[in-house]
Length: 459
Image (cartoon, rainbow, N blue to C red):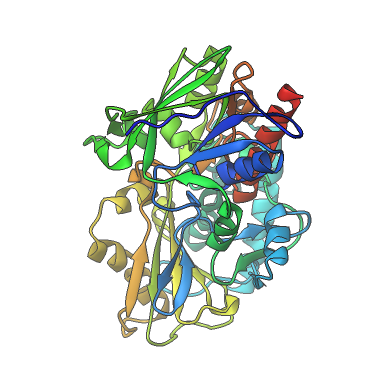
């Protein structure tokens, strides 16, 4: 049945508008909660049957794990940490410096070897700041040649680049600009997980908001008088055989069933979805914004989370990684025991490895992780008692994990993407924050920023 929102009401505190927010991830929730606090009537349209977007906490055994974002990155001044504190949620700091690395034969690299590689990486970061153009891969190859590396230390150097740059960016080195090697999007302070899941923050923000779930917005029409959105049940989307994140068309747009009218709209669609053109804008978005959408990249991080009956790895070490002859096949494993989740390991795969694993069956994906574990900890280790895995690359409402800056692009594209179109269409999301791009706190802050832009327009 068609729905309608009627514009232009007047409230006690001045003009009260009808505003639609597209997407109930952290950006949409931040925008909607801020707009509601300003006295506006707000409706969120969410294609999923839950809030949170790429924050997705789920159960594995008797523990809560994250299929999407895992950490509050820096607690000093971070609005998500402040939110967790207000809610009385327990947070636990992860020791990012606690890591063991192993060579291809399972021999652990020594502290002295770690010191050498960390010294090389510091020098590499300095070089990347001086030579930011071109791909990270090209600069790594150049630096490798200058060092004259071979054998175990060469493998360790490339593993370090995987751990410190590629995995955080959710890309292979050829996909990201060299100048992003030492870019930092976190707040100061410790990186902490929320016991019970980051999803609790999204749930808290959603309280009292009007949300229409399972509603996919396929068209956004706008002019000087307002906006008209055309939406359909999310289940009506027909996936194409091609992957939307790679080939530009992730689904056959549905025939709309609902017409929704409002004064203004806040669009918080993930960059991967914007890239496909699944959502049509009438009139077409400005050329500068379309170019920014095209130039920014979307990385893919997929997780395989394994729960065991017993712990067979060092309990106090936070991370493990195994070097590979081809570094793009390396993954990193997070031991959640120091963070309070027992007998659980999380494997992080990025880039082509993640995209390929996304279409494998469960057995093949789990076996890939188990192969690394057997090399590091012996062939007699037990099989996992349970597992769960993510699939963001082919998720129709994400089509990737989070944005990055490819060679030839810059963070200024985020600022262009953030700009409103006239005074009717506003944008938020983790690709619209050039300071905190690709983070949950960046997404939330972008939503608050969009609400402030609307407040400034309305007066």
